Amino acid sequence: MFKENLQTLARQHLLRELSLINSPSAPVISVEGREVLQFASNDYLGLTNHPQVKDAAMKAIEKFGVGSGASRLISGNITPHYALEAELAKFKDTEAALTFSSGYTTNIGVIPSLATTDSLIFADRLCHASLIDGCRLSRATLRVFHHNDVNHLKRLLAKPRSRTSTLILTEGVFSMDGDVAPLPEIAALAKECGATLLIDDAHGTGVMGANGRGTVEHFGLDSPHILQMGTLSKALGASGGFIAGPKDFVAYLINTSRSFIYTTAPPPAIAAAASVALAILQQEPQRRIKLWRNREFLHNGLVAMGFQLTDTQSPILPIMVNDPELGIQMSRHLRAEGVWIPAVRPPTVPKGTSRLRITVTADHSLEQLEIALRALRKVGTALKVL
Ligand SMILES: *Cc1c(COP(=O)(O)O)cnc(C)c1O
Image 1 (cartoon, rainbow, N blue to C red):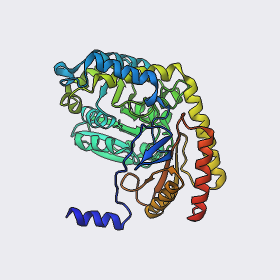
Image 2 (tube, helix red, strand yellow; image 1 turned 120 degrees about the vertical axis):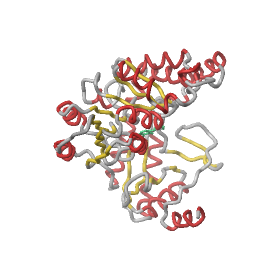
Image 3 (cartoon, rainbow, N blue to C red; image 1 turned 90 degrees about the horizontal axis):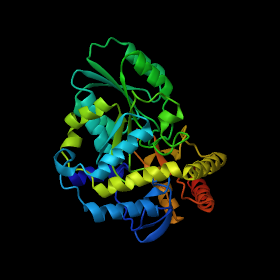
Image 4 (cartoon, protein in one colour; image 1 turned 90 degrees about the vertical axis):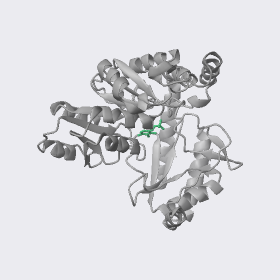
């Protein structure tokens, strides 16, 4: 059965295979023994290789060991976790924050604590799989609104709701399209109808807003009542996820969130590294400035060449090719040119919307961006995408 299913996937150009990387996440990586220039990492600010971040992890290993030994509620609540959560709350301008082992487990843990069988959840159609899985685990009734369509959400919310609680889910920056949610309108709607708003800001944290605090800062929203989810694994260069919000809500999660309770606490060294990354993110705004400069340069270059991009407003620059086979071909040709840009295909994105997903970081040099543009022009022309 597995074999047949895999063959079917291969025929549809939807088979996925792992590539072996033997280097840190940096602009140049070693894939299957060959060095390539990569545009596929979410380490937007280059913090995963920052000497101080690495040093913090090593020092914390010396002091606390590698593993945390138990779950947070048993004996795994170690100083670095506690410190990081206080810093995250301050950074996100909320009363409290709680960290989880990953962004994925944050979403699947938080949503069932917010919504139950008799709740209603309204989610953007392009919400990340972790949000959808969180909805499924909650057993609430899920209503999907068209992507970034506030009027559709409004129409859905206007229908009679006899349910006990209402939750609205969106991403701040959408992970596969790079566009930004109309948060002021969504937040106003949520307030109007007494719904809770949860924003997954995995790609907004460290990237959006004057101080990198995320899309809530970008829009200047009043944050105390908005629940903001983020990851430590993207711009913060570490690993793990978090949620920021009111104190009582965090206390409630500690009591109810299964993916928080029933798992071993994340390694203390990772929390210590994330703390230092968070401090650097705030002390070195030049990283974010460089990230955006790189993003503008690459975006302008791609648009000038005539590539069809999404309505992106972030360092995620997806080139739409729609057909998965063309996506794979383009990615393969680019790799032969020494440039690593993966094709993203269904089910990660809706059918007929396969794309080459470029992410640019602060660590890319202008010269590297030019190399990528040249390779993209060559391959785009050869495969008649341009
Ligand atoms: C990456 C991502 C997650 C999951 O975060 P991890 O820390 O990688 O588990 C959740 N939501 C969105 C939108 C993401 O892009």
